[in-house]
Amino acid sequence: SDLQPVTGALKRFRNIRIVDQVLYSTYFIRHPISAIEQMRYKNRITVSSALVLYALYVIVGIVGVFCQGFIWMGVVYNVNVFGSIITMLLPLILGVVCNYFVASVTEGAGKFSHVFIAAIYSFTPYILFYPIFIILSNVLTLNELVILQFINFFIVFYCVLLLLISIYQVHYYKFGGVVKNVLLTAFCFAMVVLFAVIIYLLVMQQFGFWESVIWEVFQ
Image (cartoon, rainbow, N blue to C red; front, side, top):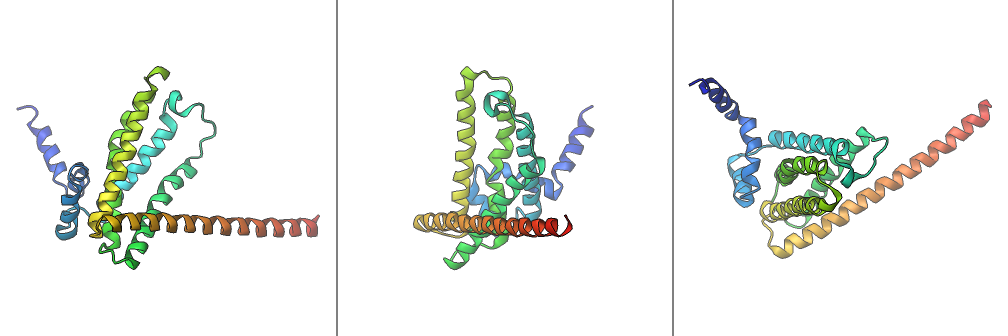
């Protein structure tokens, strides 16, 4: 048929290893425990495919910053693209690092690569459904805002649920272990952020001091 070359090309594209692994994310969100076991023992998904999803996560977020409708975002001026990218990149990777650190001292079984892959794949609902949210935010009215609120809640809830299941399965925790890991990860995350803020303020203070000294010398 006329469509045979097209379907053949799509099939070959689908069979490319990294494409297949990225598309496996749709299986991950439906069967996370099975998908994590496939990752652990059969290398079904890898760091490479997780990095592709990570990039898609950031791209979708940046598109949202520029394209969300007025009824959700209001009027936004002077959007800092670099700042938006950093805001999306750093919290996720810092959360992975903190989780792995906590797991390593609380008898967690997961490798760092497994923690990273599972965490990124857990944000698949955001990648899939947030574009729908963006589109609807531009066509719905204020009277229909509840629809956006529901979609937003659904995305957040789904991602958090997948993250909790990932922690449970990657580290082979029981329920109490998951709760302990999440609380300690949150504490570790907060301490790192606090430390970074203190360092930033000290550096800026020193920068201001030396700037004033140089200004006095050369004035």
